[in-house]
Image 1 (cartoon, rainbow, N blue to C red):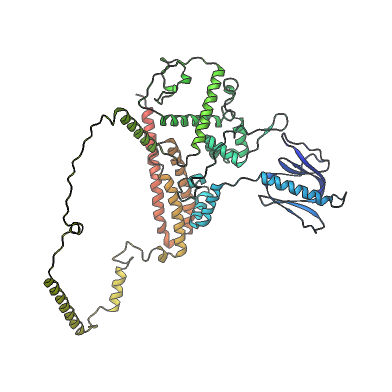
Image 2 (image 1 turned 45 degrees about the vertical axis):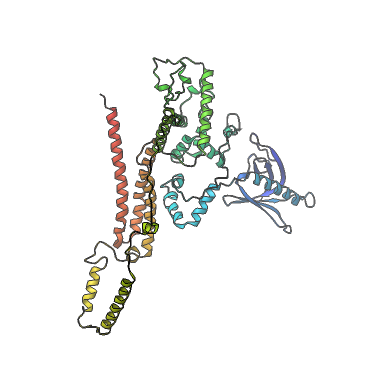
Length: 555
């Protein structure tokens, strides 16, 4: 038998010899995590695959001379196994059926759960060719991310409001149990569902992943650094060993993002009528009491920070982590993001409403009855239609007689009319005048005759339309960042400006090369829109730098 080693937590269920793979004899293994095959007396597996990567399985017909089983993977590759046990009649077929039944159960158990939102987006792209083309132009090419593309798409079919949306399990991080592989090595198994849960729980980790993978580091290095960071371990060693550990990129950015999110959540809970003084001298336990201030803003002279033990500090850190995780779980259920302007407006309205409810009492308010003068209408039909001229019966008959005489006079003149075709404009002058008055002529030079489809053809019209739609989508994301009232909008404006520059250097160049020379003016409007957006970004950056230098200038 093969002298192979198993991973920690892996349990061997089936071990079948006399199984041929790639024209070599060996042993087939089925565990609770994967399917593997190795040659006799080999120390390494020649084939191993997890059940989550298997799409389906196929078997040879009952009448076939070979008893075979074929595994189909999601990447399109296959692996065929030939059962050659002849120790008893029909034993090979029995072993094949046993493996087939167990694989069917394992594949169904480890089958990835379908993402309903992803299915709706795929269905929408298949049903709308223009949207699919726009998706390929700006998302597949790497100019815009898929999240930003779908962020403001109101046409995406969403699930019913009665259906409960799947949230984040609080035990997601606790269920990540590593597998010990060797003396000092551990192995984590991550599924797409676990990655999405981590990204929802820790938005800073998702931002760092988008910024560094795969440009600055590989996927494996990123997750190794994440699991090695004290941010993942929930600061369990704070005050003992973690304070001496080297600060890594994920921990620093994640803690900074956590502080900003806690600050935003405190701003929403500020009560303008509740402003209690600090009753405790412990700065760590200061909560603001309705003022929204942080311990760093408290004067150190009036409230000096006490010396707290490491156990107390660790408990407070653990409580903060629990509160932050609960806040992120609740925040993941929100469908729409509220901008800072809307948040400030909502806070102002809440403050005004709370102030009115505090200082006003409806029972003590004076009730003033307004005297309303009623409107008396004697003739409702005349009031609705306005005054009309009252005509008598005699005037009506005179009008009918006048119309009859006018019709007779017109018929008499028409019968006596003769066409004078000799006294008309010549055909050459008429064509010349028509050409001058037509769109694009001497007297009407501002318009193009018949529109783009008649001037340039259907192919050029489709090319211009595609380019215009792609640029309009990018510009829509760019102009929505202004006014940049939050750090998120500032970062998005910088990112979208880089996307516009990339679009100008790549897509616009390809578009101008495909555009015929005689229709080069069709790209002028796109260039103007691009340049206007880039000029806006340059002006905003210059103004931002000027304000920053003015604030840093010593007095």
